[in-house]
Length: 254
Ligand SMILES: Nc1ncnc2c1ncn2[C@@H]1O[C@H](COP(=O)(O)OP(=O)(O)OP(=O)(O)O)[C@@H](O)[C@H]1O
Ligand SMILES: O=c1ccn([C@@H]2O[C@H](COP(=O)(O)O)[C@@H](O)[C@H]2O)c(=O)[nH]1
Image (cartoon, rainbow, N blue to C red; front, side, top):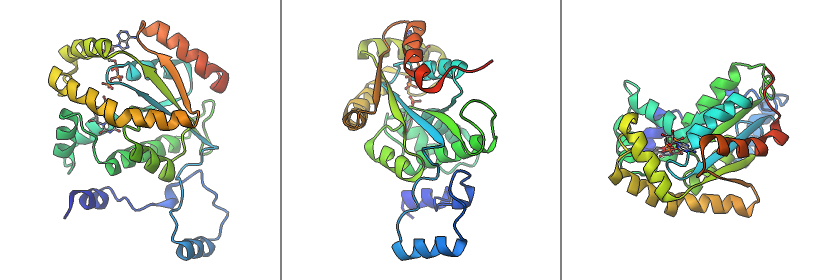
């Protein structure tokens, strides 16, 4: 069986609208299925953008996306989902049929087939929303997510926005390759990541330039990019991020 079909089958990629706690449930089931059958159109995003805020967090490898997301969740009521972390967890999960596929893609700096990543993100969002958090922007099917390191390619973004949730905007961290390389080589001394070595980093930079930068340009044309220079210290970068987010979301209440 082709690998993508195998992935779809194993991850149960057929839409399950019963999981959706944010959708309009007032329609009669018969009416719903009749509409679906008549138009055969996709059901639309699982999560309603008026209830669920998604910020895509992008920037080159080592720009500091993960570091800044960790700081954002200290100040704001967001849940942080790193696409790379979800993939590494799936890779390490005993019995996962995708372990080897994910490992080789990550080592080669390539993008894992989007079906896997989009489903992992959707599942993680659904699980967090089901917790019914009481924080600002949460509860009753609502939620706020930083989706870190995603979308890495245009098709991923389109699939996520068509099937999971439309994003609010992209938080884009800019940094020079020279600085990012230094950071990643330093991180590689302790991270245990198979892709924090000079050879993989070079490939990741190429993928970023060729495949991910067009995603930024796409959202820039829609005026959906908030850009932050990430070359300065962690605290300085965070201060700039805070200025961007505070008027929109308000600080966490202690
Ligand atoms: N502003 C900063 N100044 C100095 N070092 C930083 C800064 N931000 C992050 N770092 C360090 O650089 C390394 C990479 O940061 P981080 O993991 O946050 O980047 P990333 O963009 O998430 O990377 P990747 O895409 O590879 O996961 C880490 O070791 C982190 O501690
Ligand atoms: O949407 C995604 C995100 C990540 N990957 C793969 O994971 C590695 C590491 O990602 P980090 O964000 O640096 O943790 C990345 O190089 C890709 O190989 C992906 O395929 N799709």
